[in-house]
Length: 402
Image 1 (tube, one colour):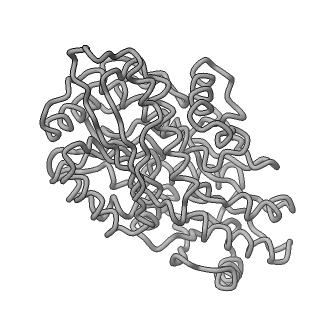
Image 2 (spheres, rainbow, N blue to C red):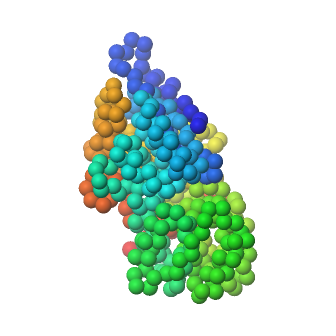
């Protein structure tokens, strides 16, 4: 665990004085993420969220935030321990989630029964925000697998002319939720499925891919993260070129050092596409919102932030937009002495944001309506695009048509 004393402290209180009668409120933000194995995504989320607070610092007077890095290492039990620690902390306001879905799917009942306010800028597992047994404490601004599978399959069929896709899925609740959605998207023509475990290396990956190719598949639909993704990409590149198949991937591969580990193979012509939200620093115009986000990030993180070389950029984008929604919610409440009451006020404010919020991806108007299946989803199907890596490692969005 590492505490990150928020760098905005000096700015947030620049207009406060010793004699100011208004009380200063101190809050802890717990970042439950995989800082060990998927540091790029954890770091990008952190930079995005804190940059949003910097951008909106004038709205946050008399508030001090301490950002605490909680490394769950991809382990659901460690994540649960972090949540229990959070509940014992009288200044803990909310948990900011990380890349992995399994911790939040497995611990969903605990999260909602105990009132752990969870903001999700990456983990995409469909069940995370769907809780039908009481109050829902989870809010997501990210890819949602109940929709992502449809976009991925649509792209495979329409843009890659893939008539016989083969699903290559991580054997976790995240992979299983994607299998349901993708098979539904395929309709009657169900795809064959191959499951793989974490720590699959290149030798095993080659055996798996040869079996998939021999089955007659004309593309591979991959759901996994950067570590396993690099080995499957390497394995595909080392198969005879005439036998290689396009890889159409979930965005989990972008959460680590995937590009640097695979750029050699991508430069040799291996086809690889992946899903993203429909924003890229390369492709989108430099609006005032974009300029403000970049300025704030460079102010806080200086040379560590560069839009051309930023790893896991979706983490920054989603973290930033989610941070803007959080700030708007905070402007609508008066913190209480009891932290449980403040969390409840914040939860209700998120469900009832009373002003539009202009973010990087889009302008959010009442994104958490508290009604229906997608009540706590800030992004919809139309916000999901497919993408590819450019030669320099930046991400280019393939715009949706029609």
